[in-house]
Each structure stands twice: as C-alpha cells, then as structure tokens.
Image 1 (spheres, rainbow, N blue to C red):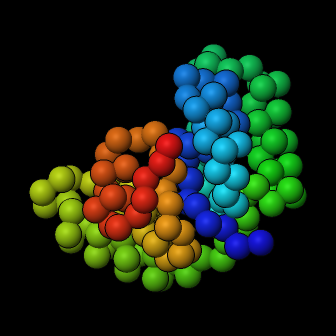
Image 2: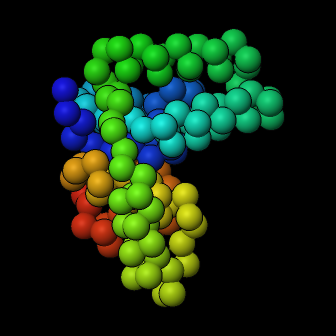
Length: 146
C-alpha cells in the first residue's frame, strides 16, 4: 500500500498517547483513513518523545510500552507504511526549503526535514499540530490537516 499522507511526530505522538490532541488525531484518522508515511526519522523521534514523556511522568512506563506496540500494530495493519527514503534528496530539499523560508520565518532543522520528507515521499497532505511546521508545509505546497 502506498502512503498518501505524511504525519509529523506531533501527530503520531498524539495518535499513540492520551494527550490533549489524542481525540483529534484519532478522529481525523478514522474519517480520512489515509495510509501514513513512516520513516526511520519517525521511528526514532516518536519513540524518543514517548520515552521522554514517560521519564517526565507524563505517561506511565506501561503506557509507553503500549504505545510502542500500537505503532508496530499500525505498521502491520498498513495504517503506517514503511517508506523508503533517499536521504541525499531529502537533505537537498530541506536545504532548498531553508533557503526560501529561514531568512524570513526562521526554521528548525527538524521541521525542514519533516516537510522535505513529505515532499520526497510524494505525500500531498501533511498532518501536524505544530503551528510553525504547519506554516512551512503550506509554504511548500502541501495540504495541511487536521
């Protein structure tokens, strides 16, 4: 199955953790039912965010392990789709985005990488709760949801 939407880490964390955006992430996914791009960057960033939440007492260690299992189930069920990444092209596109956007907007490297990954994966929709990243994705020609 080909992924049709690119979730940033804020969307994926909220999808797999009972936080303030959890219901919104689940509701969007239930309605739109897109297959979501999942890259090695997602794997480390989302798992690290969940581990940090557990370390900070924002979720239990058991809930963190449950979130990891849910991610694996989503991969098995095709909700998340392992997507090959041409890292040289991703970094090149991220630098191009930086050239266009950083001088006027200021951009974090991780935001540039997520938007570049979305563009390189062929996704048309970008899923994020991060306002700065949403703005960058729109400027890069992506539809932003939820």
